[in-house]
Image: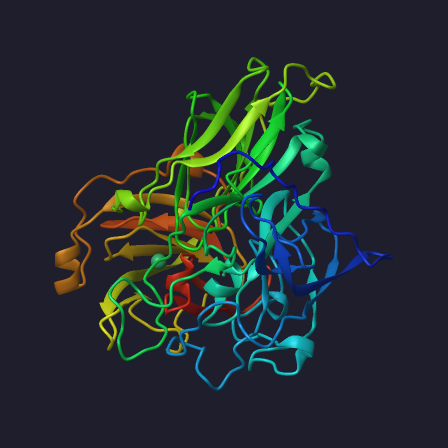
Length: 509
Ligand code: C2O
Ligand code: CU
């Protein structure tokens, strides 16, 4: 795609206004609509789907503990923007092609409002999926301050609905966080990073077939999608003018399959202050950020000695990750242009202590689950990835008891890193350890080949998505609650999630 890099400025999604704020709750309405988006000034406008008709959707800001009701309304046309594969789970010809359901990724929420993949609904709720319960979702937000995002989760077409534009930020704020005096207001900027490919006429391109086409099918799912351009907040390769002072950036990888390894091109230091689900105990100095799809970090960059200069966020992650082809790599992301002077004196700080982390002890775990990540071939010869060797429709096997702590062993038998996401809870990464894959395949026993490796400093906080690397057992620990009921866990590479790499799970009372 030949467009000038760093030509357009970074858009910042507007904050959504509530319809009303009652006693003890706030009510929002969000309409999903088709819209035309200018993704780059040198391209014709792109037909997309957006929450409130914009891409990215408006940012929803809530207070920790605030009860929020949201009515997500589907006002989309009856024909999909992108090619549907009718052979994948839940996407057969017996369901309407355009169906949506909204999940707030990382939210602690009752199951009826979690956006279960089979709880989809169409325009005007004319048709609903078998697990549909209600129109107005309730979020109690009983969590600490963190950077979440809302996105589509409809069974079998999540990759297409998110690619079409159905994603936005959902930020939880708190008094406790405000008391830390971090950069705030216009100095607190969310960055949604995604990759897309566009046709000459500006429309979205999404492949109808994998590299080796499946002849029997008109449209087939692809094993992964990698776009040719990088968008930040819906603009292709934008720039951002900043003052020479501290900024907080909430960085989210909202891509279908692409991982990022971001650095500033002057090897500039950054301070990471949070992981997926909230603040770290202390800020940590980093030069590089690795983000799998759906992972987030909040960072502080101090531009104060850089007045008048330009620095660029660059990416060197292979695609697929970690053993990808160089041809899929894209290095440019976002450029910062530092103004010569500050507008106001920077009185924000990077405190030495942020927030205590609740420590989950292995001793308290009542259950260990060994869960494999498998790769097979389907009857068309396509790549098929599974969790625990089971498809989406197999009976529920993960059924933790409310309030109990479990350790999950993610045993990756595939050659790729998969970002594994569990709804409802946050977890901590215990360790990763290399093991003998061949032996496991033959005898189903884990033979470790190396020492246990602690999570990277960047991951030592509350997580809801973890990178399970090839040839490694990744161990995570979590306590299930405060809600019971039906949720899901899955790989967050959307092409995998849509094609069987997702499982229901139930928290039982
Ligand atoms: Cu980001 Cu199951 O979702
Ligand atoms: Cu995967």
